[in-house]
Image (cartoon, rainbow, N blue to C red; front, side, top):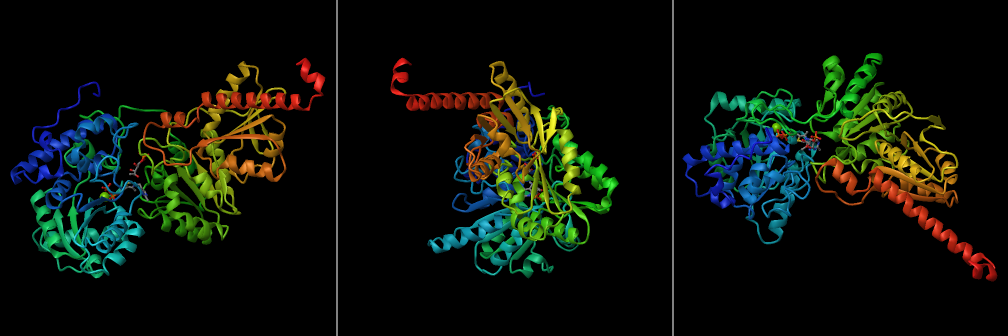
Length: 624
Ligand SMILES: Cc1ncc(C[n+]2csc(CCOP(=O)(O)OP(=O)(O)O)c2C)c(N)n1
Ligand SMILES: CC(=O)[C@@H](O)[C@H](O)COP(=O)(O)O
Ligand SMILES: [Mg+2]
């Protein structure tokens, strides 16, 4: 399918190059344009991969937003931002969609470097209302009290605690021009859970029973109770109805919530029928059937998902928690086998972690499954609610290291540095599926305190057997009188083994070890490093505060002059691109490891020769 030429944009869509062009269309043209946009979305995203379902669900809503409001004077903030493709298409970026989520191409999220119409680049959910509150207060203080902020929030994102912290402030500021557009499709990935999900369902049912769409409801609801006007529910696929509701909201002037009801994946049967998540995020697919065209071997996620079910079968104290990501974190088999022991708390990582602390205090061993990038959202809870109490909670961090197409706010490149500061926390970094199974068992068997297991977004690859296991270290490569020690963390061990082979061909002896645990540091590593001319550590995490820098600190503290070099991710936000390209660009590939070793051995030899010349008696220097 992907060898067919890209579909040409429809005749109406071709004329839309800025949001202002939308205001010139007659109402009867809007359904036609919506159809053209849907065809365009399916064609392009089926080729690049991306968030197809969420964007199919907001076509009409986005058209109405840009017909009623005046971006960028009015600021339109998309919560999470994965549903901003239509916004990008109508704000001048249609012709770049063949580069979506590719290196140097369009971001999959809003991007201020792409357009003045974009505001928030962070893909972490539940932030839009706080941005909105800050923006309107800032506008007012800067003499622009009438600039409006429209925050488009999903029903899933609304289950995040930050939203309610923001609503607590927004609702207490009558007259503040914040317009919350609730995009209620009843799901995050899976159907939205919890009391909020039930409340939104009740509001939808109340409206369908009593009133015509678009009329404001006097039904008491959470939002009016907090001081916001409430309009809806409105059919989010009916542009005139949404426009009328948005105009009412704009006229009200103060904080208001417009409740739009939409369908995720709308208009594309493979997405509408996709039970797990309505094609929330797809790879390259056949546009007609929706069948995935890319497949790699078993993922790390699937290895985890299988092993946790086996462990749960053996131990009744094992329970699991997810923040609205049962499938993406691999807990679906556990949930199917033991539905009472898997808790989906909504997009609420902070609650997930502290409720895990509660479960542990009740005598259970919770496994909290998150994407690495989202653990930062619950750092205080991990540090103070779990670790301070030395509770047996295991955090399984998927998508650790470079994730790739999701870009800067999704790379899981901070956890080893961030979590290394947590006293008593043990961090396991499996190099292959066999070690994931072993270390998951070790982590969930640890009763003395919290543990972490982290692994990347990729195929898990074949196992890398150890030649030996010495003092807690897996020895993956060894040569007599080795000059160099390579310490490969987790999946970087594979590149270290490959680099050792290349160096061996050049007569350079290398020892390769996998420490299995990034924290606490293995106490034998400094001694092992001292036995080599050069030690190089490799980790798919920032170097600042990472494993290598902690080993360097320990060597220095011990007065150990060992030459140590750290290969790690740079201390900056990394863009989107393929995982392989980004890892190579950051030097986490075998070729770079080889070059690093040769460069430092040469430098060492040069330095040694120079010091010998300096210390030699005068006549010896003359003979050289
Ligand atoms: C803090 C955080 N946790 C988890 C995620 C992963 N995630 C991305 S989109 C999504 C579901 C969002 O649901 P909703 O807000 O309803 O938007 P929809 O996709 O339905 O349009 C989740 C859980 C995230 N982006 N941020
Ligand atoms: C927006 C968001 O946070 C998720 O949808 C994310 O894009 C999914 O990433 P994976 O595709 O790696 O599961
Ligand atoms: Mg939703």
